[in-house]
Structures are given as structure tokens and as C-alpha cells.
Image (cartoon, rainbow, N blue to C red; front, side):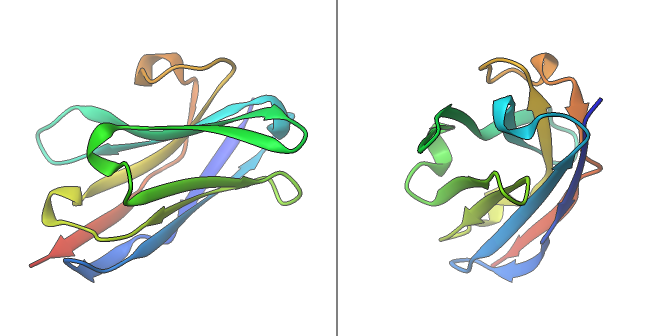
Length: 125
């Protein structure tokens, strides 16, 4: 079983930046795929980004098209933490952001078995 705890959400103006953190515990972190998803009111939970450790010195990252070039996902295996740096934020980025863990590469929420509680990100005009 793996536990995930998100932090770093908040209110920011359009064009601003936020960094979300996801602390992972309870299982061998280095072998997991960790993803970020978001859910706006009345909408489905959508994929944002994921990161997978490919070699001892390289992590593979994958992004949803609307966040490419604005968001950066990274992981620190020493502290078992995954980060989502969000720049040039837009009002349409407003949502609850969740981190989740999976055993294999996937962009589907259904394939992630462990989830954090979520953190609210609100982007104002």
C-alpha cells in the first residue's frame, strides 16, 4: 500500500506560478509511476502529467498537451517527493489537483491505484 499527500495549492493570478508537492510513502518509490490529475467542478478527473524512473539517472516525463511548456514534473527519490511546477497559469487550470501512483505507465486515472486527498488550485483573472 502506498500513501500520497499533496501540498502547495492556493490562489494565484493568471500568469503566475505555483509548485505542488506530493509526498509518497509506504512502498518502493523509485519503481512507481507517479501522476498528477485534476478535476474541475462538474468535470471528469483528467490527466495532467506523469513521471517514471527509467534509469538511475533519468526520469521519463509525459504531459497532457494543454500544459506542455508550462508545467514541469520532477521527482526526488531521496525524499520520495514528486513536484509539479506550474507556470503561466490560466483560469482554465483551476481545479483540485491529485497525485496518484501506479505500477506501470498509463495516462488513465483508472490505472492508478493509490491517490492523495487533493489540493485546490484557483487561478483568477
